[in-house]
Image (cartoon, rainbow, N blue to C red):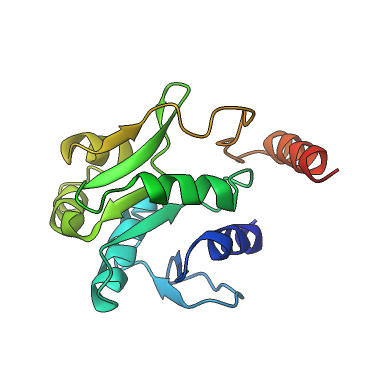
Length: 169
C-alpha cells in the first residue's frame, strides 16, 4: 500500500517524502524522513513532515495515510487546487466529518502541532478544529463513493482490492 500511495502522490505532486517511525524502513524511490517523537501516530508524522517542509522552504504539506488506497492523483490534485496557501489546513469532507489524512497543512501550523504533541492531544481532528481548518464540501464525491476507505483489517483490504479492480477493469 505504501508503493501505491507514493505512486498516487507522485502523479499529483512535485515533491513526495515518506514519513515513518525510526524503527521502520521504507524501500521506496522517494526520500524518507523519520518521526521526531516515537509512538505519536499521524500527528507525529505531520510534525516530521512540516519540519522537512520548512527545511525545503515549502508552504505546506499534503498529508496522506498509506492506508487510503482508493485515493487517486485526481483527488490529491482537487484538494491541492482548493488550497489558497493562506488557510492553516484544508481537508475534504466525508461521511461523518473530514478526512485529515488526505489534507494539506500549512507550514505555519508547526507550533500548534508541537503544542498538541507536548500535551498528548494526538487527534488530527482536534488539531484541525483548533487551527480552524477549512472543510472542502462537495469535492470528490461524484462517482467516487468510498474514496476514503481506510484499510485496517483483511476485510477492508479485500473491499479496497475489489474496488481497485472494478476501477481498472
